[in-house]
Image (tube, rainbow, N blue to C red; front, side, top):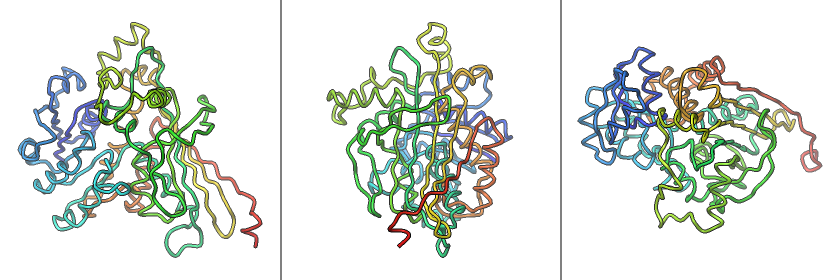
Amino acid sequence: MRIFVLGAGAAGSLLAQLLARQGHRVTCGDRDPARARRFLGKKSPIPVREVNARNLWAIVRAARGCHLLVNAAPAVFNEIVLRAALRLRAHYLDLGAHLTRHLFKAEQLRFHKRFLKKNRTAVITAGVAPGLTNLLVRRTAEMLDAAPGGRGRIEAVHIRLYESTESEDPLSQWSAEGSFDVAVSRPRIYRDGRFRLAKRFSERERFRFAAPIGETGVVLAAQDEVGTLPHFLAMREMDVKIGGNEIDRLRRWYRQGKLQRSRGLVGKRFPKTPTPRLVAKLIRRGVLQNARFAAAVLVRGVKDEQPMLIRWDGAFPTLYQIRRRGMLTTPIAYATAHLAALFIKHFPKKLPGVYPPEALPAETRQAILADARSRDFRITLKVTRLKKTEEEEF
């Protein structure tokens, strides 16, 4: 399959290399080809073309002839890239939503009828968080028999993420644009069957992640899962919280009045994603010691009148472990690229329309989860039967 990857940053460049190893013919596009080449490596045979993601026709010209257009550029360009895919009559995949036109619904879903008409497939928010997290929520719904007509139901979905970088200087595992978007956006939550906007960095709680992380503080953050899951699965509430020193730093700046959308993206606080060469340099200088990323998905529901709590924990290789594999990238970029590669490996070409991970066919979802568990990702499951409350017993 001929694949065009738009955005050759940390995740996009690694994804392009993984796809080339799968046997696909891969081409990359980026507004800064020289920097993209530093991510790919000078010896990489993958061609890179100069493309501005703001320019629809530039994308069309650069990606002409591709079967699949992968959007690894900042999510703010999603609608432009979706229109380019339709012009190309190509399938489409992206890694996240921007939630602009509709505050509580992923903007890509507006293109469903257009992709149906072109007989092409678009898989959206297909990374690790969102992406893998969506698959785990849908798998839990199946375990609870919570599909329409089933005997079970979902009461609440809580997604908890952990991002930590042991560095003396501000250094984010996300792109500068992604980190800034999280910092200045109000979190979307779903409570009592209604979407709401919450206060940034609010509702702090103590949450225990799987070892070796343990207990840490988490706060509400803007995440894309809330823009799709409640639209496809019935539930009463949902929220996403993030913990770790990266979100703690953003929370501190917010309380100091330093995070305002009107101020724009300040390079000192939101540095560009480090290239592999810069990562190696920071490690040698002792500025960067390690980095971690972890995810937990907790779903509270009822099956056969029995209240249950189902918890999934996802543990991913640390920066130190990734280095031992001969690679220099962040844990989030590593996990995102590998999961996106699995979504492409099992891409449902014969399913026209626009689909988030939770709306994919069962066989596709099962294949992706099986492959993820066979990699170096540790995904564990714990099921707890809860006591019935007096109200439920009545």
